[in-house]
Image (cartoon, rainbow, N blue to C red; front, side, top):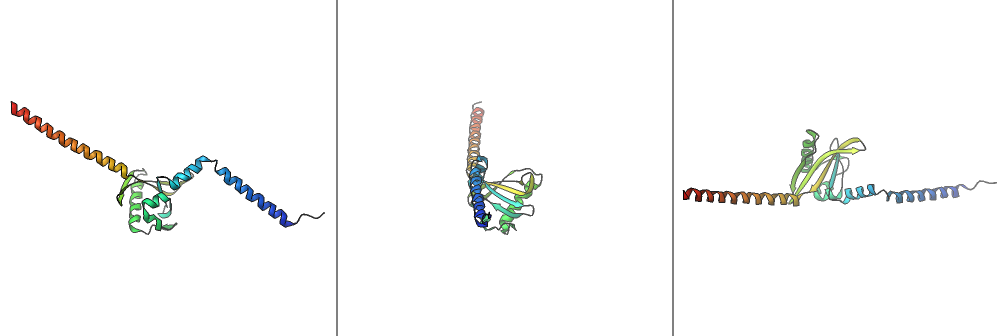
Length: 173
């Protein structure tokens, strides 16, 4: 009996492999944690920018590129060649490097107030560089400014009324 020709066995093997890939791809949809995390990272309200230890640009999501358009011109595995952006990233990371504590830093650009948080970029448990998280905090900052102005006006009115009361009390005696 002759063995089956090579081509039909190879084709069958290839079809099996392709069907397994479709099954694995489909199973990945059931891992809701990974799917949601990936969706939030790519299209959520948080912008993410990653750089390595030498401050070479590793990548940024669409939100970060919308908030800081200079990121669109950067090339992966290259330094940040935009001088203004490079200075800002260095400033934000230097603040983090002082003691390794993540602080909220604010940056105003194009009528927006951006909230920046620096931290380590992890690959599993291994630190691989730095990650910046960027949020548009304009609305919150405007709210705080409104409250501050309201409180200032309230203190001024209170001081005026206190003077009027003090004058009326001292004038009657």
